Length: 614
Figure 1 (cartoon, rainbow, N blue to C red):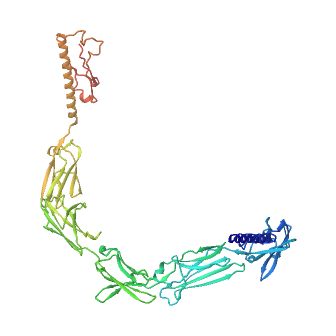
Figure 2: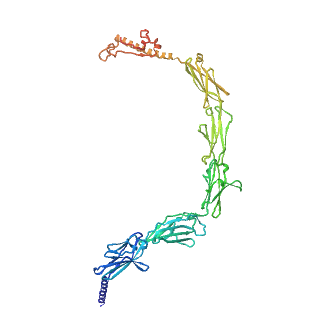
Figure 3: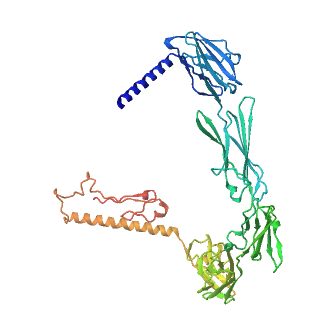
């Protein structure tokens, strides 16, 4: 029975539902979207969907908008055409194939509630409405930071920055951020003031000003503002650029140091004392040097204005001492000071001593010692006149001295711990001795009556003089401790036989050497060569005669097999010819003779042939 009741109830429910649906299908209904959004200047499409029961038709469609709870006609649609347009929408309305009404060039004033009213002949009228929302995307916000510095000691809440956004609809909201974190209004610490202005265009300009206390750490903080607005049901944002602000705060830390490092300062350097403090704005700096126990000399006139740098040029050991820097904070008038000890490294009193100090005889020895004073450890190096290192340490012993090894020696004193710190002192080591002749032009080949140069080169200390035992034109030159004398003379018979003597002397002695002159006879030397040639010719002739004699005696057999015929006139093999040529016909005319001892003229002797044939 219970099952039958349940079935009866179910049938009754389906029947009621069917009756309601049939009733609804027999009525005129209009459907429209609740909200339509369009950007300012765009085209709004207002859809109006309806169905006339029984496939009936509509007679007209009336469009209205609500203004202060009253209806204002927009237009009337009949037969698929727009009739009776309102003056506010003239030229901006169009009708789609689905009977949707489009409004072009939408403005802020078009943001209203629109009603679609449908009239039929057989099923009465019906209507519905939609909200037209017009929006304008806001411009990127502009942020301007406070141009004046903000003190951390300010008693009031200072202005940080202002943010402005123009030409938006509906008006957006503005939030503030520091270092990426959103700031929340906080009593006596953070405050935000916002304004909203509607322009004649219907668009809004919004601005927001941030007020907040700052700390020292905010000198590196970055602030920005963010716009928040809604578009087509979604929340959107726009961010401004990041800005810094100038924060004023008193100095907490201070430092005074020397540039370059105080351990490396030496006499002649340019030194800077740099005073630094972490306050903003930078405090006023003053520099002082202690002269006596409680007496300080003001050096502020030597410092660069408001930079905290004191310049000391070409410092000396007198520049060493205690320096201090004082700062004065103009914001709260507080003072701080720091001091630093400046040590200027130096080398002074460089002295070279020589033992023995009197002039040294050639072959002797000398000891050189070098001393100096400095606050740092010193090193010693010895160099000769050619800047060649000849020893290390503060003593140098020179043995077996000669004229050539004498001269100026330098003691270079350096401080290995301070680069570039050095001093040099020179000492002259003089070696005395009687002169020595180191070069002389002997032997010398000359001819009588010839003009020649005789050379004598010597060395000695004290400076020697050079004398010749013959008369002539003498010229002396000096180079590298040597004196050279050149004597120009004409060779006479006596000079050729006796030679010339060079005498070199000084206060310690003298030395002399003789230049040997040898007579150079050119014709005799050439005659020797000619005699040698003649001897060779005679040897060859003798050899030919022996061979010929042996042949006549039959000692040298002749035959066809492996034999050589030296008598056959046609063959050139049996002819041995020795040719002697000479350019000195006049000199050799008396020396060249035929094999039979006959004399010939000079012309005939230009060419000589010795025929070994019979």
